[in-house]
Amino acid sequence: MNIRELQDEIIRLKKEKDFCILAHVYENREIVEIADYIGDSFGLSQQAAKAPQKNVIMCGVRFMAETVKLLSPEKHVYLSNSEAGCPMAEQLSVEKLREMKKQLPDHKVVAYINTTSELKTECDVCVTSASALDILRKMDDDKILFIPDINLGSYVKSRLPEKQFELYKGGCPVHAMMTREDVEKAKAAHPDALFLVHPECPAEVTAMADYVGSTTGIMNFAKNSDAKEFIIGTENSIVAMLQYDCPGKKFYPLSKKLICSDMKATTLPDILACLNGEGEEIFLSDDVMQKAKGCIDEMLRLG
Image (cartoon, rainbow, N blue to C red; front, side, top):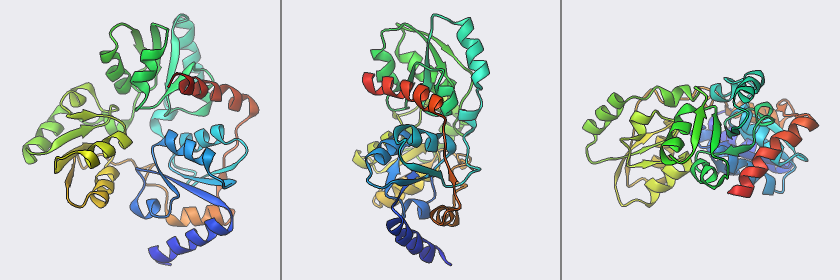
């Protein structure tokens, strides 16, 4: 089967078998085109909770599928490709976090959404890249242990000097590899372009940006801006996505290295296999469901 035939069969089967397909914006274009909802990880989880379908396929990585299950416990949730993980989400263990909490008993634990469900059971509140600054500003607590992304944590810390932060030295290996030299090179090549960057990038990179925000924030800024050229400092799928959505504008990757192999793991045959009963269904224990949902509920209460 070619791409179009696979897409047509997937669209037919998802309607026949009552499936909702979610696609993160970092997925390849042929995946995005057959999705019911496209967006950031937490936004997709919220869309899935509202969707009428009883079965959900997450085209993304494992922690995203787990978050869908946390918000839709009554639904059957499938991960499109079992090998699609997230190095950031997996780099901090529950045991290590418990040790850190013992050393910092007066700190509230704030977890970036890019964490496993097991890790969220040990956290007080969850944040997204879009909501982190607002949520932490609204928290009454002044002492914060922020996990796992040191770059996002540093970005928020720099804007909330009234609070005391302890940061775990983790992060996204793709975003973390960006340097000031990459920005200088891109700006020299495209002097008229605005530079839009994700806060998972190092501080030396975000300091040079015209806009810092989540992937959805970056896309909305580019779509609504009067500018015609943009350098995109996040996963390169966003460059392609914006070129489709804004054909009258030009988009350039900050670096050709900004590619997440886990986000590229999902294929159309993977999704077809899920629809035919061969995919991995996500199961979480009742204890994990209850405790992990708690820090998400607190984010929603504050946000």
